[in-house]
Image 1 (tube, rainbow, N blue to C red):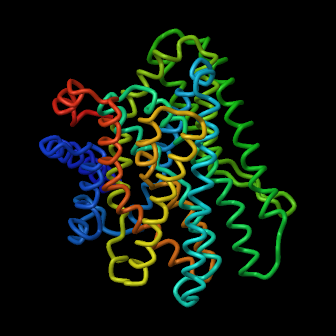
Image 2 (cartoon, one colour; image 1 turned 120 degrees about the vertical axis):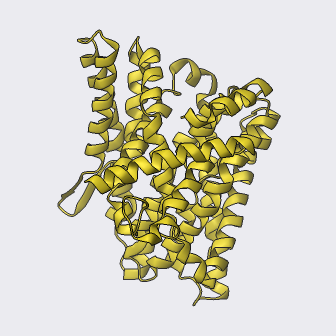
Image 3 (cartoon, rainbow, N blue to C red; image 1 turned 180 degrees about the vertical axis):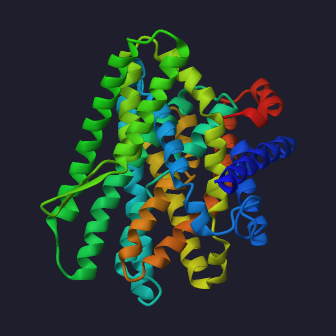
Length: 424
C-alpha cells in the first residue's frame, strides 16, 4: 500500500511541477500532466523498477484504474452542468444536430478510408478491424477539453456548444461502437446477431438515461436534508461514486448483456441534478475545487499508460497515420458541415472541429473490448498510437482555437500563467 501512496504522491508532485514549466512556454496544463505521466511511466523512471518512484509496469498502472474511472465520473457529472434548460432552449437543437452529424460523418469517413485500405492490402487490416476503428474514431476526450476550458476560463458560444457536443459525442460514439462491434463480430463469426447489433446498444442507452435520472433525482431529494456546505459536497461525491460503481456492473439476462455507460449515466445525473436543485451552482463550484487533485492524477496516469513499444511496429504506424488523418478530416469536416447546416456563427464553423480532436479514455475502453477479435491487438495499438498523438497535440489546438474565436482573452491568458499549477 505504501508503494501505491508514494506513486500517487509522486504523480501529483511531478504533474504540478511540470505545469509550472509548461506555463513558461504557453502549453496547457493538461499536456504537462501527460508528459509527467510519460516520465513516471514504464519507459522512463519506471524502468528503474522502484514502484515508489515510478509506474514500473502496465499491470501496476492498471491497479489505479478505479481512480481514472472515478475521475471520468466527476468529469461527466460536471459536463452535465452545462445542459441547463435555459441553455438548451438557446442551443439545444444545434448541439444535438452537430453532436450526432459530426460523429456519424467521422465514422463513415474513417470506415470508407480503412475499408479501401483493406481492399488494397487485405493482409494489412481486416474488414472487421476497419469497421470497429471507424466507430472508435467518433469518440472524443471530454476530460482534456474541460481542463483547457477551465484553465483559461474560456467563455462564449463556441465554448458552450463545445461542452454540449463533447458530451453528446461520446453518447453517440458508444451507440455507433456497439452497432459496429456487432457487425464486426458477425463478419468474424459468420453469424448475424440482432441482439448484439441492435438490442444491446439500445438497452445500454435507455438504461444509462434511466439510471442517471434516478441518481439525479435521488441526490436532489437527499440534499434537502443537509444544510452545511461540507455535507452537501460529501453527498454529491458519494452519489458520483455510486454512479460510477453501478455503471461498472454488467448483467446477463437470457443471453442479453445489460449495462450502462459511465459517461452517459453521470452526464444525465449531473444534468438532472443541476436543473432541479436550487443550490447546484454553489455545490458545483465547490465540487470543481475538490476534484482538482483527482483530475491531475487522471492525466498523469493516462500519460504513464502510453505504450512506447507500439512505435516498433511499422504496420501500426502506417495504419495509425491513415487513421489519424482520416479521423481529423472527419471531425473537422463533419463539424464544419453540421455547424453550417445548423446556421452557427463563422467562428464556430471554423474552430469547433479542431477542438473535438482530443481522444483518450473512451476510445481506449472501446479498443480493449475489440481485443476479442483475431487481430484485436492491431486495433488496440492503433488507438494507443492515436491517443498518444491527440493527447499531446489536442489540448494545444483546443487552446489556439478558443483564442482565435475570441473566447480566451489576454487577461485570462496572463492569469493562467500565474495559476497554471493549480488549474483544474
